[in-house]
Structures are given as structure tokens and as C-alpha cells.
Amino acid sequence: MKTLYLVRHAKSSWDNLFLSDHERPLNNRGKKNAPEMGKRLKIRGIIPDVLISSTAKRALSTAHKIAREIGYKKENIVKTRLLYHSDEDDILDLVRQQNDGKDSIMLFGHNPGFTDCVNMLTNAAIANVPTCGIVEITFNTDRWSDINEYEGNLVFFDYPKNPMEQTGK
Image 1 (tube, helix red, strand yellow):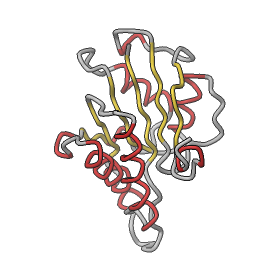
Image 2: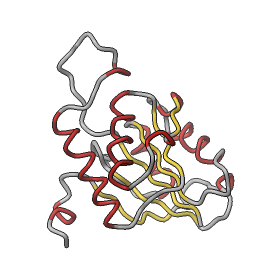
Image 3: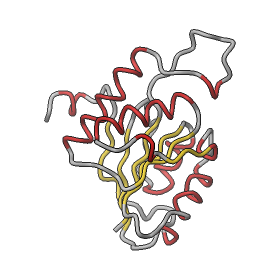
Image 4: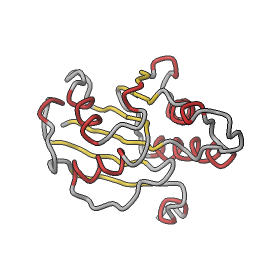
């Protein structure tokens, strides 16, 4: 079985309008939400084999904060510009290229590609993966290259304002 985690970057700052989109940092809410979501992953016992992040500052900062909480070395995070504003087909291509010796991967990136990818892989009809939202999808295969549309099983979908997770229910 293969497990894919898609994590949309935490809330970003628009304070400096002179920064390029790629260089926008997290805002205060994003800096708070990312470690909180990392703690939720840790409670679930989730430590993926590989973390791969968009090179955008807000995505990489989210990856670093979550990695710290789950005990993953931030220097081992793979960075790729391919995840910067990629569409669902680009994301699926990246997933299919992963090493079959790794059973779980976590990608950090952006919408609309991440929401579209979740819906393409699971047919879940999720309207939006919000900032710092996390989706877990499993696939009944031993090879990443065998992953196809609508064959994934949506295991969980969590996000900072999810009342079910905040109350522990």
C-alpha cells in the first residue's frame, strides 16, 4: 500500500506588495496553524518517508514547521519548483516518479492544484482544501507508477478550523 499526504501551505502574508508571489512568507495565522497541524499529525503517528515541498517560501516554511513537529529533519525535505502552482496532472506525474521503496510521501504545495488532485485521485468532491489543510489518500498498490485517477481511498481530511479535530471528537 502507498500513502500520499497533500498539504496546502499555511496562510501567507500580503503585507509587502513588492514581494513576488514565490517569495511571500507566512502570516501570523499561518505561523500558528502549521505547527498545530504538525501536532495533529504526530498524534496520529504520521511520519512520512519523504517530504517534498514547493520552493515557494510559504510552502517551504509550512513544510519546515510541520517537519519539526513530527520529528522529520528539515534538511531532508526535497524541494522542487514543479509543485509551485502545479496542476493535478503535474502532481500525479511527480507522485508516479517516486521510489517504490518509500511507502508514504507528503507533498507541500498550492491550490487549485491540490484540491483538484484530491478530487481526481479519490473522486471525493471536496470544494476546497483550505490553507494548511491536509489530506491523506491511500492506494492499494506497491508501485507509485501504478496510481491512477479515482483509485485512491480518502482516509482523512483535516484543516485548522476543523471543529471535529479541535474538540478531539
